[in-house]
Image 1 (tube, rainbow, N blue to C red):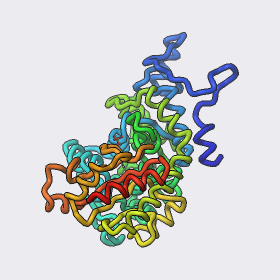
Image 2 (cartoon, protein in one colour; image 1 turned 60 degrees about the vertical axis):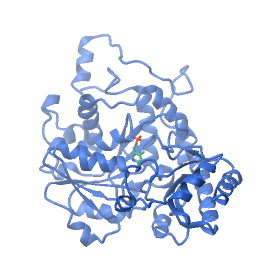
Image 3 (tube, protein in one colour; image 1 turned 30 degrees about the vertical axis):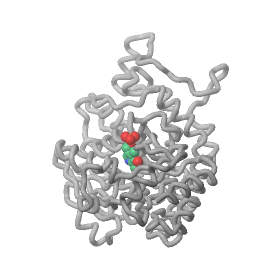
Image 4 (cartoon, rainbow, N blue to C red; image 1 turned 120 degrees about the vertical axis):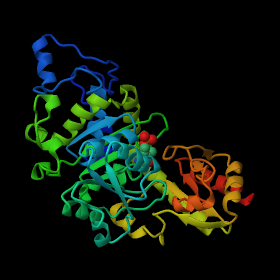
Length: 423
Ligand SMILES: *Cc1c(COP(=O)(O)O)cnc(C)c1O
């Protein structure tokens, strides 16, 4: 099936007389006739539901849909994008291990991996995603367990050379984990280019309406953990917390997701609520339509801004002449995302003044939903930094992040035009 069809038809498959629409299984627990049957579930001898912290039918249907959209073999939902990235890395890294990470990843992921996971004993080397393969190779160590990067970085809008990163990771016998939030599976399938695991903040385009925070992890099933049992003992040696099960032996291509569910979700518990999964599923049904409109509108806005005399610079990978235009064409031929960044000639002050004049576009922290929104990192998320610190963090003091929505393009541009004319 094509992606448009998967978005509508996959996941929930009702049997005779069952509800046509995915039901919300708002139940913590599931009933069984015999205690022996329930015991087999706990031994992972049989699959079935027993407690929503481990698995829930509503969540599983939605995870299955995202899995098919990405072309993976297994997937799980998490309570947030942060939880997805934490589990994706922590599932194969423990104290004493090491991660290679692109410097331009989302601030939340940067903090998670360089600060919080450091407290768990996991080291990280931050690399420039545009560096040569030779340069990047120097970041790897014997204890490196994965490479982590983003398809389109939020908010730097750097497009990842996925094939280059996959080659590097595989040359060092580790998987490439790609956060595909901004591109969505509609515009890019990282597995096609060699990525092994994909994560999502479903909070963004997938939910699409700024209603529910959520995340997802998808496994391609392509990485051969069993070929490196010394590197990945968690997957290749008996799990004492689960009756000595060896995940790669018992679950084959589903080993990684099964371990993440039966170990990390069991013990750390960042589940998505079935109610949120239901809302996410509604968002997924229209994802291809919305993504197409987001990209169309964003390109029009980028062109408008580029031609405006009061605009100093525009960064949008879909714009010809952009540093990442060629990479974007290769990996995302149908479009990139709806997020643009730009600066006004009047700098930081002009940015604040312009934003106050906007009527349609709202000032919010969120990105990637149906409504056009703006954020000025120097005045908001990075407020505590001075101009020099901002530059070091890769955030220009005048940078305005514009998340272009799916309203009519004429109204979005009219709003930008009137606000910019005031500065
Ligand atoms: C927002 C975001 C996250 C974090 O997701 P939450 O759902 O807010 O926890 C991770 N990665 C990227 C690229 C994001 O944009």
